[in-house]
Length: 495
Image 1 (cartoon, rainbow, N blue to C red):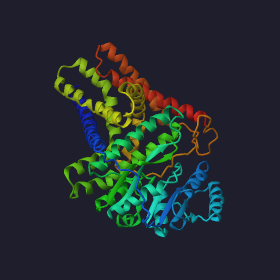
Image 2: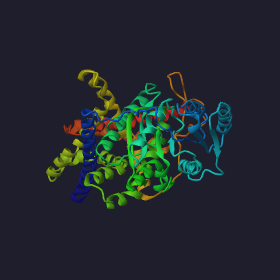
Image 3: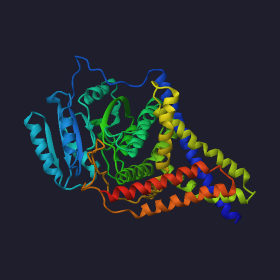
Image 4: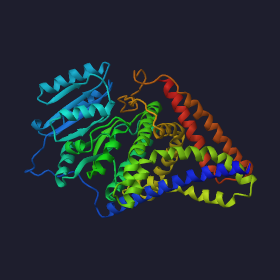
């Protein structure tokens, strides 16, 4: 029993320590963000002078079976405010359904109106999105390449606010903008996703940029310098996050990523739990694959300690889910050890200190949420319930994401699974009948349902032992797994 207790507490404390260190890195980004905000250093959209020589820009639209949103995307790109003779649009279409015909018809309409837009088809889907982008880059006319995923609806001034920034520094390889949300108020799930993404773009990306640390192109709503892509080795399909991979390879080669949050590119958030899980799987597994591939190179590179520290936790951020699962599953045995053994009091007290990591993450999200125009009370009234629900769902997705991270870390390969798009922008819209929505319930969903019961048992143990130190954690876990289980089943049944 002694060795079993030691093993439980060692894994539990070690996982909490990693979460604690990760949260410290996030607090550091808050500091850089706040400092830049106070000094007015947050980058604005570029100002275009009358003497500005507009370069040729190629807009790339990687498409695979986007029946419901592709026309909306093409129309918005065709309306971009940029000289027609300096604009090329590539619809990189790997589709194998009716999307092909929709694109062909829409491209013809805009060609007849004078837009240089091409419907580009490859012989096969080799390399998935990365392969499509690499092929498009090889034949692109533009010296700058703007990329938009199918769920985006860029505003007409997007290029005017972003592309001129390249002229300020020849080492700028990417200009990344902030994502907006056209369906944020559709449901609780879309509202929580917007909450999390807003913090990423307002605090994390700003913090990395202002602190001089590595940041990443977010896969869409950004512009690349073509020579930067070529110098970094081009788009690669050996990870599921080709954007993170190329971003780090470019920065290791001395290129810079310029972040301007005042340019906002609206997009549609996934509204169904199945779509959210698909997206999360790709993001978390891809990040783990990229860390496996590039972290050794980062640590060997001639970079400052601060940049290496932040890059390490940036590349390993998806590993947090493995640590969450470890701490969650072991938290119930820890309750028994706390109340039936006196041998581990010091180690248990140390592990309780590391729980502050979760508190630090709340501070991180608070800085991304609060509106300076509102009073503290108004901000708190909105923030507290949303933060509670975000943490719950975040924890509820931990097993699903941890499995994806584990696959990435051990090198298990899988196909690029696209996030199904629904064209849902108002509460009247529905995904019922959507041909891309999976009608099957994943067996892992049943595990999530079981885990909600497991952590409800942890709540019972808290009252049995009169030990409430882990009660908030178990409330979040039991509710989180219950919500993920419920939405997974409910959304599949109504597909």
